[in-house]
Amino acid sequence: MIREEIKKLVEKALKDLYKMEVEVEIEKSAEVSFGDYSTNIAMILRKNPGEITSAIKSDILEKIEVKNSFINFFVSKEYSRKQVGEILKEKESFGNLKVGKGQKVNVEFISANPTGPLTLGNGRGGFCGDVLANVLTKTGYKVEREYYINDVGEQIKKLGHSVIGDSEAVYKGPYIEELRKKNLGSNLDEVGKKAAKIILEEMIKPSIKKMGIKFDNWFYESDLYKKGEVDKILEELGKKNLSYEKENALWFRSTQFGDDKDRVLVKTDGEKTYLASDTAYLKNKFQRGFNKLIYIWGADHYGYIGRIKAAAEAFGYKKEQIDIIIMQLVRLLSKGKEVRMSKRTGTYIVLDELIDEVGLDIARFFFLTRSPNTHLNFDLDLAKEQSEKNPVYYIQYAYARICSIFKKALGYKPEAKNLELLNHVSELKLIKQLIKFPEIIEDTAEDYQVQRIPQYALDLANSFHLFYRDCRVINEDKNLEKVRLALVLATKIILKNTLDLMGISAPEKM
Image (cartoon, rainbow, N blue to C red; front, side, top):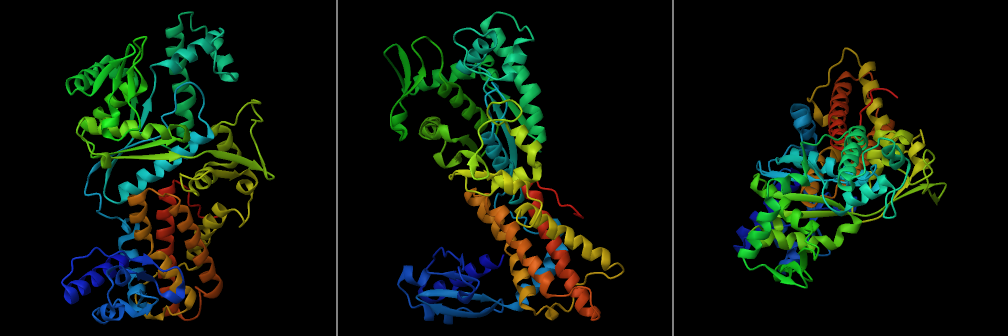
């Protein structure tokens, strides 16, 4: 990656000049006039930026400038052009990185209680988790996708009450009416368990299949109880003097590990809390050999972060081995107003209904466009738009246009020769978009901000459409045609890679 090469050049210059071993941060320049990349390391170290630039020698850089104590780097055209050949050589492997070093990562997401259909919030977390798993795999991690099924506890009892229809009923809707028709019995616990199983198999799993997600493991909370793992956790905490009894309940000393207050493990009625089984589940994951655990939770779980990290530390794991992504709420908008009611059922909107309405590609893209820690407004009218106003249509049209070019160019093969012929400003801008791809992947694997991927796809499609407008690919100059076809093929490869990461189709015609 060019960014990594520049980083090494600057670090070498600092070592040669000042005998300093320093980690240098190279950033993408905000404006074209400031070059392609920049660093403020001179300002941080209080060194002369001109002195540093004079010590950097490389043919990958066209020039280096100093502006307001920032060192700005301009990548050479020759280096940029060569990357077209690299893309054609590596194909779908372009952008594959080894930063993960084969470490095992568990990505647990959706994990909705088996008490009803999946919601829009589940969809947002589901697509985020799936794409993040794709990105981590591309960067050299060994990733497993996992769904945790809460089939024990209070919510299953509430489901039982709801299906029986007594005064403690909580869940409502047509699906509850359908469950009542199945005559699941009168025993509360049995009714709850049977209903949960039906919801999982007949509602949740089909929805997940419709989402295009495949889990490697479906993990049942009840298995932790059957195997005695929850009791063993409580026993271990007692031996470590990390639990105590108060007010006829058992408490975890989570404040010893940075939590804001101690947490209940066993309630006064003897029922174990979610924290007890979640701690057993956490330890189970580490015992299965995972180096890092990633949880994707809904907005209502924010307060749970401290206690789960405290539980990890209590058993000798590092807080850094656990990353928790909190997904903020989704609002469905139509004509500028929020849509709350389902046309189909008259109640809240379920994920299936939205996918049926707009299609999987649109749903995936729109859910991925905002950072997880911000609220998402899903514009239903824009999602249904079949024009360039719709970002998914705009991106897929770029791919279809590429396919069309190759149909017209039948008999001529792209060649990564004579790359110096690529001189037009739109050609060079497109190349620079292409070589950003590995950096986008690396940054996303590091900070989990998956919204970079759809934004990159949009930027790449825009660069290609401008190139298509400005540069005639099929023309009388056959050498120029071949080299432009090479650039178009490189674009096709990267655009397809990007769509694949998002789980979005790449249509050859539209």
